[in-house]
Image (cartoon, rainbow, N blue to C red; front, side):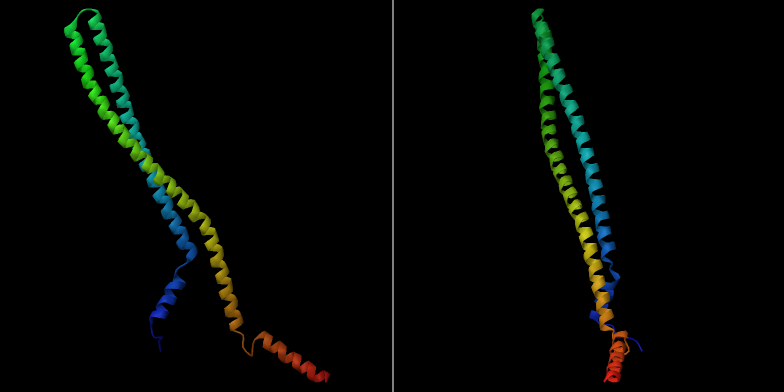
Amino acid sequence: MHEEINPSNVNDLIDRAEDPDKMVKQIIIDMEEQLRKATQGLGSAMGSLNQVNKQLANAQMQSDDWKEKAKQCLAAGNEALAKQALDNKVKQDKLVARYQEMSTSMQAQVDEIKSQVDILKQKLEEARSRQAMLAARSRMADAKSDMAKTLGGMDSSSAFAKMEKMERKVEEKES
């Protein structure tokens, strides 16, 4: 004698096997892991941006140095060296432009990652507050279910039925 397996029985077994508290805790753990990875990605992107910005500042400083050297060479009457210094300045200016372009692009990416991290933080905080609410609702549902089983399980041999029977006997004696 075995119970026939039908879809409603299977769904009932699955529903009983899934512990909402554990499932919500796992979801929050997963979200925390996503946030940790996103935060690491943000740190890495910011480090790369800082590196490019240092290279940009260095290229700008070298461009300024070549400009100053060109002025000094002109003041000393050495036009050939002044021309070489200006050629070097032009090369540095091209580097400055490339680094500036990279910096602008990377800053946009960092801003986007920051935005995503902020969204993840908000969602995590929302999930944590919903976790407490869901846990309370789950406990309440369990309590209601237990109470329904208790009240539904009462029959003629239950304590309440026995009490009523005793009351009737006492009433009969009194009359």
